[in-house]
View 1: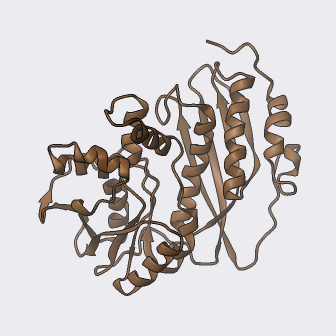
View 2: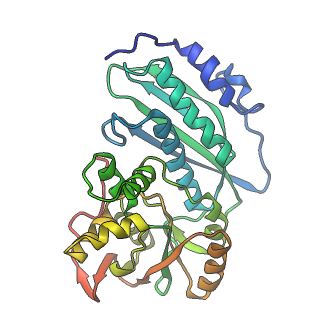
Length: 329
C-alpha cells in the first residue's frame, strides 16, 4: 500500500538527513559535493554495499534495523582491511510504503549507530520507486599508507583464524522467518544477530598489524575463504569441528542428528560479518592477547597449504561442500 504522508526529496534531506551530516565536510547537505581534507601519511579506503527488500532483508524487518545493518556491513568491510571508519555516503530508494514515519524510523537507526561507531553522513541521494525499497551505502575510512590488508597475502604455513561465532546470521534469518524451534531467548538472540550484526571495528588494528590476508563473512565462511585462497594462489584447510558457535548456535547444533551436515550449514550460510584471516604461527600469541584485551572470541580453524581452493575436513576426512555460500547473481 502506498504511503499517504510521503515527504518530498528536499524535505527528507533537510529534516531527517541533514542532522546526521558531518558538521564541516558534508557542507550541510546543501551542496552537490562533500569536501574531505587530505590526511598526510594515510590512504583513503572505500567500500560499498547495496541491499534490496526481499533479497537482503525481509519486508517485515524494522527499518531502523535495516539502516543499522546497512551501515554495519560496510563497517565490517573496512575492519577486515584494517581501516578506521569516519563517514559514509547514502542512497535511499524508498518504496511506495515508505512514508514519513518509515523514513524517520530508518534515520533513527542511522543516528544510533553513527554515535556508536563514530561516523557521520557526508552526502548521498534519495528517490522514490514503484519497486522494492533499496538502500546503498559507501563507507570511508583511513589507514596508514600502504597498510591495507588484501586477500592475496596468504602463504603456505600460515594459520587461519576467525573472530566471533559462525552461523548466527543464517540461523537468525530462519528465526526471523519463524522456522526454528528454540527457546525464546535463543530465538531473540539469533534474530538480533541477523538484523544488527556487530562489525569487528575494534579488531581492525590487530588485523592491520598481523594478518597476511583477510576478508569478512558475508556470503559464507567457506565462500569467503575461497576468495582468499584464489587471490593468494593457495589452499585453505579448515576443520569443521572447530567452527565457533554462539550459545544460541550451540543450542541449535545440539539438536541436530547429522553433525556434519549441521556444521556445513553454519559455514555456508553467510551474513555473519566476522573476520576470517590468515597469519603467521609466530603471531598467534600476540593475536590472542589482542583479542583477550578486547574481550573478543578468536578461534584458530585451519591452515594454509600449497594447492588451491578450500578443503573442509570433518573427523579428519575431506568433505565435499556443493554450495559454499550465497551468490548475488
